[in-house]
Length: 226
Image (cartoon, rainbow, N blue to C red; front, side, top):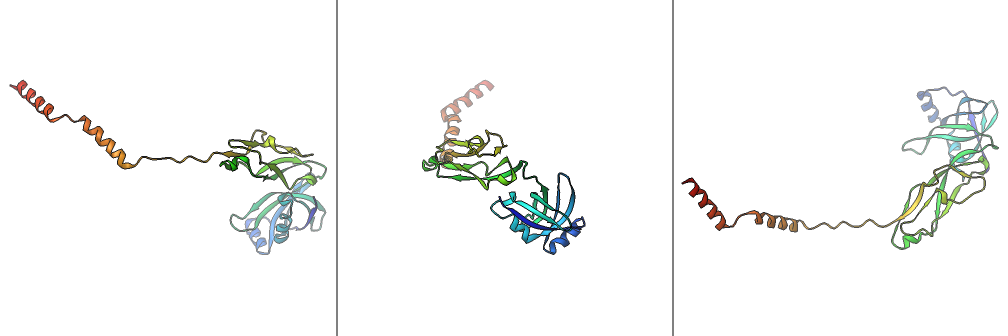
């Protein structure tokens, strides 16, 4: 994986007001820290940051951070705060990495093939689109390819079914479902309201006494009163 260079300005004052001022200048507030490195408040060019995080490596890009008036630090963007509805970054944490030490990375899962169960009328249901792995920074894959063509109706694939990749360790629960093929939801057939009213009427009629029985009952009550 190739490294991306990014210049970092120092001397950024803390506080939300200063952060807003920095953003208006086309910069993104950030901080860099890691083993043997005291946290440094910095600002990076927003456009250059967008470019750095939109290579094939995405947010797992190795970024060579050229700190103004200081050293160049090999980092990865590990805490990325995005604007809730605008396509911009609000703040980024750059973490110093050692290229000889493994790191944790969230990598996308690419589903390949047309499942047999879908051809039978089933529904493809992805349960997750990313997987957490442990790997050397220079060996982080762009994505994990999973062949789902042989999954039948009612079948599923789990983390343990992901392909083995040299140097990559899957950290998520091996039994965690990645995708499944489910049967289409059955339609619920409701009885027409008119039929329900007719049934209710029949039940009510069965409870009323016939005219003869009503007269006889009334007469017996009258005799008892005499």
